[in-house]
Image (cartoon, rainbow over all chains, first blue to last red; front, side):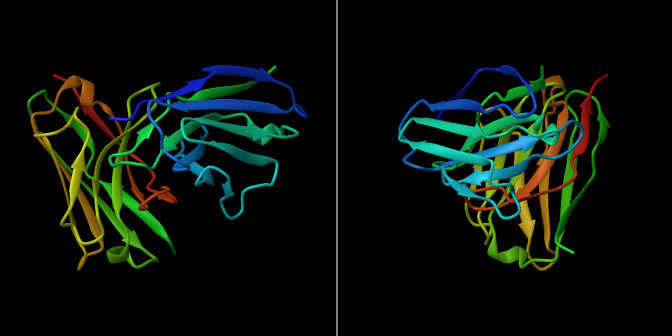
Amino acid sequence: DIQMTQSPSSLSASVGDRVTIACRASQSISRHLNWYQQKPGTAPKVLIYATSSLESGVPSRFSGSGSGTDFTLTINTLQPEDFATYYCQESYSVPFSFGQGTKLEIK
Amino acid sequence: QVQLVESGGGVVQPGGSLRLSCAASGFTFSSYGMHWVRQAPGKGLECVAFTRNDGREKYYADTVKGRFTISRDNSKNTLYLQMNSLRSEDTAVYYCAKGEARLDLWGQGNLVIVSS
């Protein structure tokens, strides 16, 4: 099974900041990597798919990059609604694996 | 309206069984692979089962293999998860989700509590 490791596990930032979350796969997954945002009590929502493609309706301040085993999610100019938990997920082999999550909190 | 609506959760004793359902609407259900994803209280996300659009191929996480069975009825636009030999560690919110690669539509989640 593919293991996905995110860093950091938690992150404090201020509105207007730029933040980066890293995700590492235990083996090469090419560009089969998605990012999700989850707010308390709600289902996750896909933000980025295939490493760098922006899901319809997602603000352009979200971006993704990487390939092989190392990937990043960047959020430019943090907005109040961005404080949430973020998960990476590989779509290289089923059943898919998620990272453990990164909780983004307001500083 | 494009949506997934889950049902069937609740409280069950260890060793018991439960069947979850996920009713799809607003899209061509038979064209998409479907997943069950769970989230234990305060924990992260775990994909536990996947079935391809025609139901012929099924895949399971090691944590549920041999105990859970995913199935679908494309004539009823419904996905199922039969859960047997339930354990306390199966306590979680269970989501159904649509997609072959990215999970772009999720249900509202259904809480399953395994407790005596």
